[in-house]
Image 1: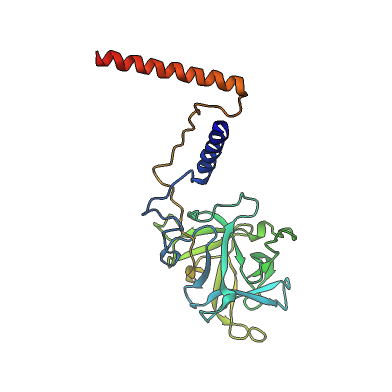
Image 2: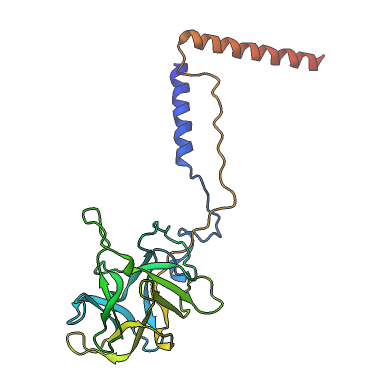
Length: 275
């Protein structure tokens, strides 16, 4: 019975060890459990945002409508309404890079991809002309992939973050530019609009020169807070049990005898103190 009780005690100790987190979060830490994402202002890996054009106030937008010229890929436009769900994009790691941890800050000069949430295609550019101005076409291309479908992406999905002077990490409502890594053009829009079937939407394209028409900022969205580990990580110590349940009966008796000897030594010390 004693062996069984000690064995169960040992199992309970091990389970308690693994049930306790290796790191704690302080009450004032910026971890998802105690920071309201609606109040967080950093654009981080995994954040799902709307990009607003500084000039037209339209949101970067896509939909299941292909260009009638150029590549024929899924079109990307500037959409004037604020509530359309087709204007959400998720910020993710660059093609060819290791996946970033959700909540990781996006530094100035970082290379990212933007995934269109509803169609699962990447913000993309390549050497085709845009339909209205003849600048470089910007499209939505490929797929994120899932357990059954492999990811379809390439280096033309990579965009470099260029922040305003003095900014070191990407933040909500701060003007910035997206530079296409492969070709060097800048994500751009203007006040010229499409006709049917996407009437009233602004052209989005890639421009070679910097000007106010290629300034954007992160607007509405779900901003994943930066995780902040506690300064005080929990330390665990596993102590040796006085009786090892894996031992056979003879070994158990030997251990009990050793324990009795230790008890006798303690008693002798107590008597000396009393004298």
